[in-house]
Length: 268
Image (cartoon, rainbow, N blue to C red; front, side):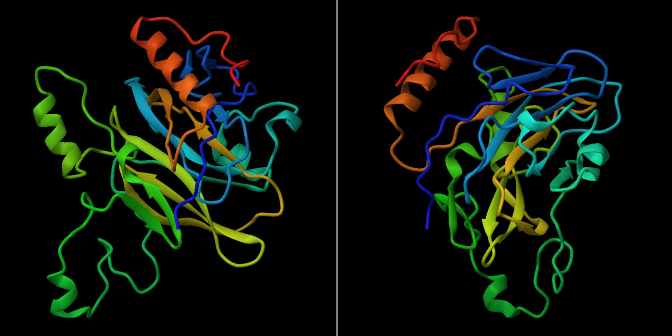
């Protein structure tokens, strides 16, 4: 079952002291240092609704990369935004954050072996064709997320054909530029959910389990260390509303012409 959601995703106006948002509030850039880059989604997420960002800019010389997760803290209620999502925000409670690394981040479930293969599955499963790039949706439990936006593509350029081959085989490192990383929560019984991290179209597994859903859950994106700038990727689950279409059209027009998105909050 695919969620039918079409809210225009933005970053919250409450964020770390070193973060600068563009006028559309869809791009977050850490302007100095390596910390104080914690950002939140403007609105709480719904079950099965992914908050997806693409890494736009890196900064060499720092150790560590993007961090992403969920929090039940309404950003407006924070006296100060924590310097770090890990451990500061997590230590406040009701927050679950996952650190993205250069290596594969897949969570190994009990009963699995490394690489995601199940032991003793037999020849039938081994010969089953891979459907990573043929399925139109990524399914987690009964939640379906359209795949078309989950994996980035290289921009036109001298070596774009080489980069596209890397994307097609999902070989792009999670921390690389153009990498797309998202967070989503999936209901697991009454009042609880599991948090899943999606990296370039692949589900990394449940990185946090039995998260209480009695409070609204906001996405957390920590533009940390070697990650310098990220931009939200809008995911369309069904027919987009007129407001969303207008916002996306204006955002695209202004970004192509080097201007920010101004005065769109009144679009209805």
